[in-house]
Structures are given as structure tokens and as C-alpha cells.
Image (cartoon, rainbow, N blue to C red; front, top):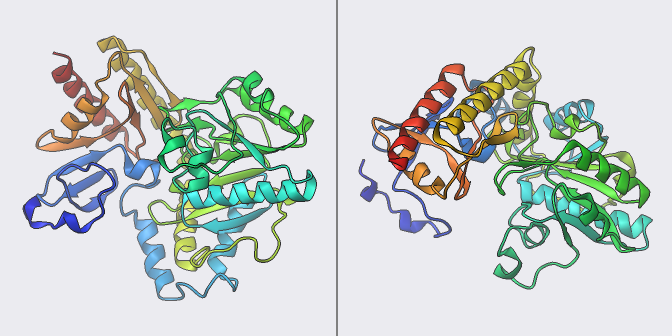
Amino acid sequence: MQFSQFNVNALMEITSRPEVVFVRGEGSWLEDHAGKRYLDFIQGWAVNTLGHCAPEMRAAIIEQSGKLMNPSPAFYNEPSIALAERLTGSSVFDRVFFANSGAEANEGAIKLARKWGKVNKNGAYKIITMDHGFHGRTLATMSASGKPGWDTMFAPQVPGFPKADLNDLESVKRLIDKETVAIMLEPVQGEAGVYPATQEFMQGLRKLADENQLLLIVDEVQTGMGRTGTLFAYQQYGITPDIMTLAKGIGGGVPLAALLAREDACVFTHGDQGGTYNGNPLMAAVGIAVFDKLASPGFMESVNTRAKQLSDGLLALSAKWGFKGERGMGLLRALQMDADIGPAIVNAARDLAPQGLLVNAPRASSLRFMPALNVSEAEIRQMLEMLDGVIAKIKK
């Protein structure tokens, strides 16, 4: 088919999209309407944990769809219980609330923290978040985010989200007052260009929270479910958060998210939180399939091996082209360039023939890489070769 045969005007215009309609995918590869294949190092923005159309996920959908899809969240169902047990058993958290998106999970975390402040801190409600952080696109999560320009886009903002600077503990201390109830951050700021929090900063936040009777909330929507080399990123910092949010990788490509909390933070009463599709058995069954693959022998070791390969390859490209290095954790990485050529590289890589390459530029001077966690050695090597060729064309 030709692109002109698709009535794309039936879709609401929310972003600039290239004239490509994807029709199928497998593993690290996508295929468009014209039969062209693309090596995908975006994977739905770190969503497709096991790549496109993973056989484990397909089997789970087929099996569960023949049993039960949605009995209503007013009742228990087996897959949601089984997935909640897996998540609590592998983390420091005691209870799980399932949702459908990262923004919804983060809304739940904000509500839970404010309810905790009402119960335990005389109505304290302010949540300190980080400048350049990203927590979602609802009104509250946009207000919690520190993305430039978002403070006026849908003004007025939801109040109560003072902004500190990542890796600057003093900037957090200055914002704490009697109305502060929590500190919320991403262990790695993905949308800002892949900036990890330091060990000292994360441990300092935990200490600050303890000294001031505050909750510590980690937004692991992008970093959770093996993306950074451990099941959850907080595990690499030697800290115990009070609340954690997950989405993206937990469903491996289907709408699934989770709000996890330690028992002391679980202050919701009946009617405080809910959702029509939340914890439905069809999505939970897929989540189980994803989790069990991540927990299988040798899987996370392979993730870390591939992460080192990707990091080393990006460092070699940086040295070759006079760039400013690379950074990240696990298979969430960024190449820092010496000029604002990111968008040009993204477009040129996608337009390569006979096969294209999909990468992301969160900032004009950086490229972000979020491959499937089961990406192969050969696929990383091929990506690096393709990217090297694109850079050569852009830099000439």
C-alpha cells in the first residue's frame, strides 16, 4: 500500500509523525506498509521489554482470553493476585494497586502521599519533585514534572510541587517545610536526556525523608522491570523507598501499570482509589509472562552483558567523532553529541535503505537508546554500524 491510501486525518493531531504506518513487528524489528524493515532501538519508549510480539506474551493473551478478561475490579481475579505476589516478593513493598498507564500510577502515588499527609502530618500535601523530571501528561503529573514550558501549557497548574535539582541535596533541603509530605523522583531522568541520580543523592534523600517524616517515592515507570540492569533501579542505590510506580516495561507492550507501597504508607480507604480496567486478568496475565521471563535463569545477566556492549560501542563512537561521551544505566543509555544534530540523525537513520534504524533524540544534542532487553549481540553491533554511517553523512 501507499501511504496516501491511509486516512491519517481521522486521527487527532497531537505530534509530528513521519509518513510511515507500521503493520507488523518481531523482536527488535518493525515492518512498515511498504515492506521496509527497521531495527528498533526505541521499542515504544522502553515499553517492549521482550521486543515486538514476544511469544510468551502472545501465548498468555491467547490462554487468558479463553478464560476471563474483565470481571470488574470490584472482584478478585487470579492473575492480578499472582502478579502482585511476584512484585511484592521481589521488592521491599507490601501491596500493589494495578493501573493502565504510568501517569495513572503516578496520580495514584500523589493521591496516596497526600492522603498519608492528611492522616499522619496535619494535612501536609507538598511533594518535592525535580526540575526536568517527567511524571506523565495528566494535569497533576504535568504539574509534578519539571519539563520546560509545561508550567504554562495548561495553566493554572495543580499546586504543591516545588522543584529541586537532581543530584543537589541542598536544593531539596531548602524546599522542605511543614507542608511537605514527600519527595518524588525518577532514578534516571529519561526525557531530560538520560541523567542518573547519584548514589550519594539517593541515599541523602532517604536520610532527609527519615529526618523530616517524609515519604520517598521512586517513579520507575521507565527504569523498572529490568531496564537498568536490576529488576528495579532503586535496588542499585541501597535504599528502601516508601512508594514506587511502574508502567511501560511491566506490560511489555500492553496497557499495564502498578503503584506499590510499603504497609505503613497504605492509607487508602474504600472509595479513595479505583479504575474500571485496573488489574484486569488479561493484562495481568501478560504481566506475569513478562515478569517470569525477566526472572528466568541468566536473563538479567544477559541484559548487563548487552548493556556493557552498548555502552562500550557508544563510547567508541563518541571518541571517533569527538562527542562528549555516553551515560545511563543498563539498557537505558544516551550518546551526548557536540552539536544539535540529534533530530537530523533520527530522520536520516529512519530513512536508511534498504533497512531503517529507529533511535530517539530527547534533546537536540543527545540520542537515547532503549532496545528490547533481549536484544542480541549482533543487533547491537548492527545498530552501531548503521549509526556510525549516519553520523558520517551528517558530519561531512
